[in-house]
Length: 501
Image (cartoon, rainbow, N blue to C red; front, side):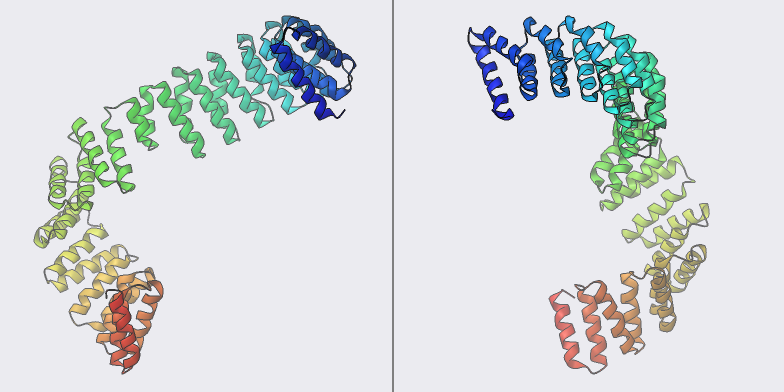
């Protein structure tokens, strides 16, 4: 009879043993199979006896630990773990020296399930000395399952194992036992182990062990290069709930976790607002800023940040009000003056915007953005020469400022200084070859100069970058028309109209 069919027959007999009064007879048959069957039959009988349980199976299974076939010895050790009879402890301890690593693994597992204190020392030896990493790992798990305080010392030794899987299991085991003396070794593992998986397991173990001593290493683990380890450290700190973790969590931008520990932290709410803003969740950012300000209404930076979110939401008057509060709290806050200028500019209040930019510049004369935006506001008032002067200062402060070069080109164009405008646009494009507005502005300037062939090439480049840009098609059509290429021009105009240009 084939081995697979024999296995099915054994399991079927076991089912009958559980459901009929003749069960004892079936167990007796299994014991006979365990003694006299072929190797696969003996292994199947050992497995079935472990599932059936009963004191009568213990001695035959103990005898099977010395079977010539390693698969039988493995199944016998596993079965004794299922039966959990104290008589098996000594023989299973002896089986820890079996030449087959599979047998040693199953014997260790069984001893862990039985949980007898006399197994601690031999399991500890196995965990630290066995040549097979899988056996050492199983011995570590068995020590954890036994849950005996005497297991802590060998488990601490196992966290130095060369095998990362063994170190990981040792960390998990120490966390489950929760002995305070494990905190320092676990901290070392969490911060120094070369394997990210081991560090993560050690962090989780520190959370399970808990207590004030775990907080400092968990805070350090927030800076781990592995995001998974850092995430676990933040979760662990929330579980422990120590207030010392709030500031480091904020520094690590773990704002929700910081709020979980201290819902009254204005810094955490302010940081959460920034995070929401960066994620494009502007309305939620405003709510977070409002919460922060309800806890600390004297923070000018949060008022400023609220203003930025309100401006991006199009709520310009409210944004200006927020900037005004920030400025009232810190009149030297140049960035709040700058942001106020932007909002006023968008409201069409050019003169007030210039005043705000002037204040920002007086506080920070090297702010290229403020100079550029002042130029935009001056341009809006028709003060082209003054606007160009402002753009020039921005460019001196930041020669790589493509937007300032483009804006200077627009002002030069409006002054009729077309060739200089083209030069400014070229500078902008050399800094940012994908700067759409600069390409379009250069095309218009070239057309105004009568350099239509060059203008066509410019519009071709814009269309290459943005094939659906209707304005670029219309500009191309105008340049082609000026060249007398009427049919091509009409095709370009037609395409531009289709695209809404």
